[in-house]
Image: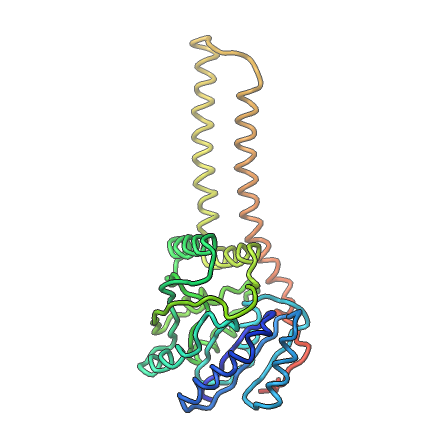
Length: 310
């Protein structure tokens, strides 16, 4: 198998046939052996029925059907666990990322690169809020992490089988694949493109999912939040020392003070707020450690036409 294409699917019934058609045309142009691995992430619509129907008509169509929704990154991980291609492509089912770009990515890979990812020049059909938050997040992450994670990129990319094998050996449960791939290293490059709006349907990435995704990226590849808590603790302690010196000066030297609880309450609430923030950040890291210690399976497969031994 030369190319495996992993397609995470969540409520994409209106896009399945168009995506399959365009991907098939791309692979025919490349003239390579291929498989299309659709990973149904607990869709509530008719997506899995359409995928199964395609698999009966086209032997290159494979599917993994989850028992429930486990999340986009876990769906991609399941595809990585089961693929067998010398090169592996990750692409979403909403057609915002053009399948035709795979041709250029594959050709770039023949030059000796292990990873070729797609970098967005502009994004159509998305709200100003999502564009702004994405821009801030990617740039913040690139500054606070110890590795170079490319900005303005998603999971749309092609990878060598060696990269996939290393990803399979990374056991963390809170996946942030684009960070993991950057951490692995090797020769990586990119091509630029204009991202289109969704072909049909609505995005499955809600604000809460975006926030969780951002936390996984930050806590998975940076200890900067813990350092911030430490620095902030020193600043608060220094501030408290000045307040204490001023209180002693006012009480015993200038004799210019008013007894009361206002200043005391302000200090207590301020320090209490800092402590709660610190506990929350530390709790996020502990929560991820606890998830890995429990070592539950990342996903549960309801049905698949892939050979598990392979």
